[in-house]
Image 1: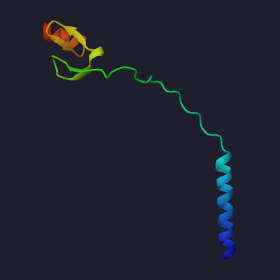
Image 2: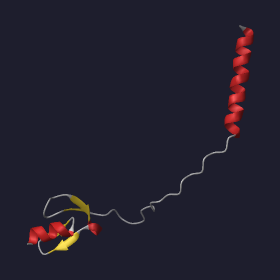
Image 3: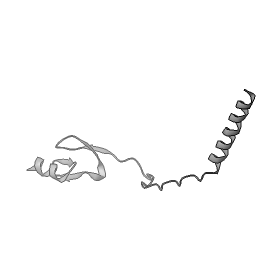
Image 4: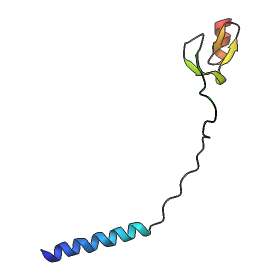
Length: 76
């Protein structure tokens, strides 16, 4: 029994040493830049009601729309 415990301790030590010597995988670069300004307002589409960021909406005669197709179908 004493030898089994020593064998487990030696194997655990070997495993730990090998794990420490392995090179760490490189960190992937951050694709998205960190936000630097105030939060963007979310506005509902006048046609379907879906919330879209203010800078991605299409402005029409009767309000803001989520796409040009919705603007055309709502305004005629």
